[in-house]
Amino acid sequence: TQLLEQSPQFLSIQEGENLTVYCNSSSVFSSLQWYRQEPGEGPVLLVTVVTGGEVKKLKRLTFQFGDARKDSSLHITAAQPGDTGLYLCAALNAGGTSYGKLTFGQGTILTVHP
Amino acid sequence: DAGVTQSPTHLIKTRGQHVTLRCSPISGHKSVSWYQQVLGQGPQFIFQYYEKEERGRGNFPDRFSARQFPNYSSELNVNALLLGDSALYLCASSLAHKHPGTEAFFGQGTRLTVV
Image (cartoon, rainbow over all chains, first blue to last red; front, side, top):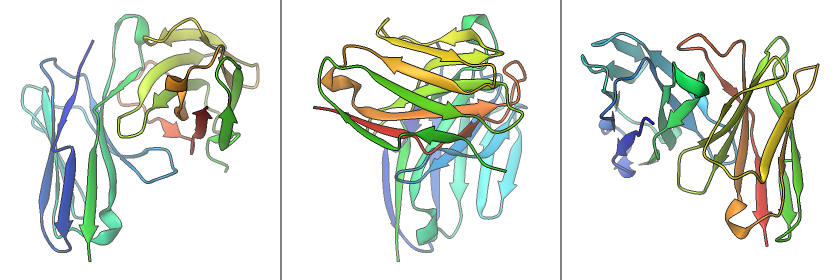
């Protein structure tokens, strides 16, 4: 079973600051996804990374997949209040009896103050 | 096109009762998964169904069961409810279940409160 550890668990920053959220595991991922969830809503997919060392950018968000495919990071530049939410990393199980299962980290609650 | 729809959105039940939660996937999606999200934590995998067959099961007791219908909609049933079953139950649909990186689309969830 893959266990994902996210850090930090809570992040409270001022508008305009930069931040990084980390997702780590002792297991190798076949692929990793980042989601954002707002209160009362389901998670919404931001990005999928598949290749070790891969870097993807989505406007002010930069996602990086570790070379060994055991860790990932999400960096937000010049955070805005609209970035507030729960950020989740999730590993896709690519084998065994739970093919297609997503294993989520515990999440990072980000609050961006105006 | 409608996204993943779940019903009801909120539900209050008493300990010992049973509950049925419903999910309609995005049109054309054949895979439905169920997740439980306790407040302050990430979602935990409960079941995955594809083409009406169970393809994956998480570490949940037998009180939890599910099924998928010919139109690919799905139900999650929980018997003998416990206080600890209070959570947001999320349904996710995807085109298939075997492709790494397949995008899962989540519904807004059903907030279950057991009192």
